[in-house]
Length: 282
Length: 46
Image 1: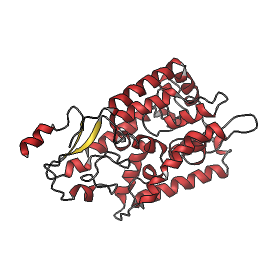
Image 2: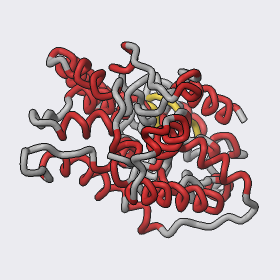
Image 3: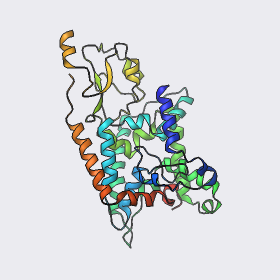
Image 4: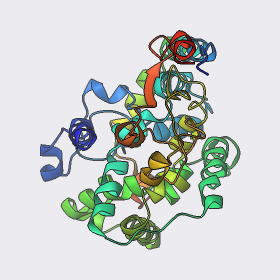
């Protein structure tokens, strides 16, 4: 419940320009130069900040082919602190998928191989704007253009609904993106966060940091009884007591809450249970 | 066993330095220009 409130507050904060939804106009204040640590389309009428994926792609796609140190550095710093913690606690699109998942009593497991799709997606998201260029030397933000369902939901549908001049420009590409969005929303009814686990380049990037970040999930082996409660309750189908920090974990921390032995904690290196406590118990 | 993670602080430092270098190169302004204007590709009609 507490995480749900944080997710709701974060989604609202990231899209707090509420009059923009009515007017069909974007926020154009200086906050737009600040990246947010989640996938949140900057063309959303409510968006106060810049989507890091869109920003990186747009800068890379220009004539100057800028590999944005600002965006990469920002994401590296965020990932170094908590890995995919931002996915689990702050991402509006992840929150929406979780809400949808609560509507259906039927639960399906995601085939493991599909979780690897997001790595080629990340590679293409980074590389294509530098390499796939038209005759005049310009590229496009290909991920945003062909895949990003957050852009369709947060920006495409609200803007097309409010601005007839944009609605008049709708073509096959728009409907393709609507189909991608619809497929993911329907999938989210049965599978927990299908987009985050299969197609999100930001999740793939942050996942690299899960084993390296300052804050990590830790298992107190002296307390863990291997009862498997954490694995049964993990919405991503992981086994925290065996491997607490895989790249697939979005750090919802449900496992730390349900562990009957209190063996799982999410802590920084400095605050992790000390080795001395283990030796004392041993 | 709990291990002290040394890569985390190094990555955090590297990230902060990269971000500052990007700011020094004027990338925040470039991000602002992109983010403050309507991206037709993002909404599926570009």
